[in-house]
Length: 394
Image (cartoon, rainbow, N blue to C red; front, side, top):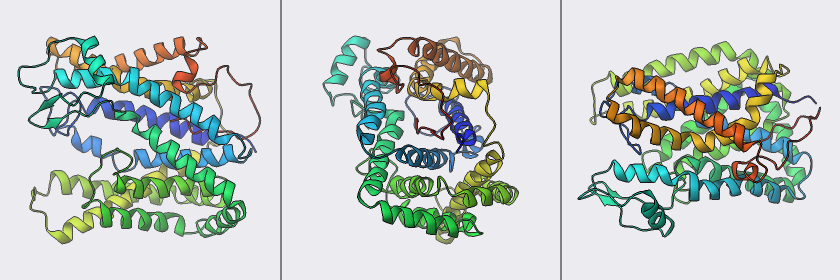
């Protein structure tokens, strides 16, 4: 089989959206590491456009990519994937993420402020100092911040490997049955029902923590989607069905987004939302989450054989750019603040600076052998292959 270039393109685009989303987090009222003096609700409806589905899409693609890798065999798989995922995670937590925590402390309301400089902070960060506290609580360090996705991906990958290793016949049979079932109309409604049940049952009971061991709602929505990708990676009928349903899916995504935008920003209920309407919102959120994913995959599947030099360059760049981008955003945003630029101009500059800095760093990383594993790259570039081998790089 040829490489699934549509999945490559989806992953590249999704992480590109992530950069834009995290720049946007500086300007909205939602809690984040540093905040613009101009932060408010203006940008939030636009942020809501991708919030329900962006990460679930990445887990779906990562599940499919894991299946392709496991098709080569389970022997040595966990060691290889752990090297590619856990080494960058550890390096990120120790070196890349600390500046985010430092500027969060600088931007917080710690009594008397913090004045000891970055190196002193880094030493306390590495020692898990619990003393960085303000009226909102204490900062937990060390932290993985945006790299939580890597930790979750590793755990889900271990689950997929265990299934393939311990019950290969059961997995094969399940792939066949699920593939046939979701090659029909169920490709749209069944995953919606799955994520709707998770949201209605759990979102009001469990806060989203990204802490792995206590993040039950996020596991309930992301692990099933990852396993769907794992089971359906080679189910051509499923992907073809999504292609045929792409316009219907896009329409559902648009209509459900309109309801969500009204619910959160136009209904006027505030904190006094009727219980029934809150339940409807959670169901509609699930409709938006899967219909948007189905639309993206359906439109992209038409280009599954479309390769290009640009795509070949971007695919290995995704992981290093992902690791670096939020630190670049936090540092640049904090340092640009004294210039008091108009938010629109400042935001565009932040986007440009982030992409420029991250891709500039990638050009260095990919040329330095000892840096490559720290950012999830193989020690040396692999030779091209005709086999389908999309890798689940975050």
